[in-house]
Length: 263
Ligand SMILES: [Fe+2]
Image (cartoon, helix red, strand yellow):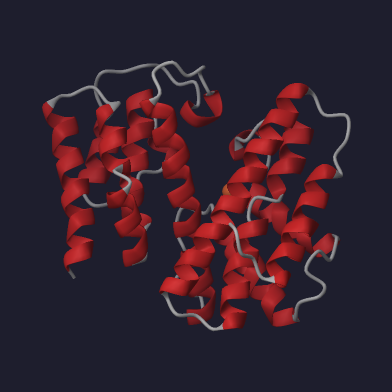
């Protein structure tokens, strides 16, 4: 980002000095740290773009961007302590991230209300469903962060799927068995218009279908424009085996997304 406001620069510095405070990392940990650091910065940029698109006020933009910068702050302790990005094998990195932020008073220059809304969005960024009990403000920042995060994950995944010469990356594919067909339960969810849960995922094909189902958890027209402009869905589909069920799923997802731009 060429131009950055002072508050954004100083928040990025706080974030980077937290990440750089970990010493004695293995080369693999260092590699994963820099991947997560770069991801966090791009998510903050996406949150900024979404905030501008939504015509938010200066303070509202700040909340959305701060949530973006710090949303994965729990990843670094998770990588250090457990050498994994798998929450099920370690701990919930979002809940832990909120603990890190409160414990270190990282956002102490901001008001209690800003802190509260940032923590709420971070805590909810990785949950399967957004609780129905949120205030409209809590819901706004939670949705912005989830969209901003997904847009970057789509970018990283589709670059990976499109590059045939890439080294395998198990943090993206989860090292699951290869399949030629989608699991029945996964197909049922996605064709029923539902987000696919990680628990149902059994193969590399299921992971990609789950990723397609994320369109059901995208909240803003801006994000659908980005998904279609960058051809994220096609790129995932192109990496899948072709059979009737998978073609049917892809068509449904594609039509659902295109209809979001008609409304
Ligand atoms: Fe995360």
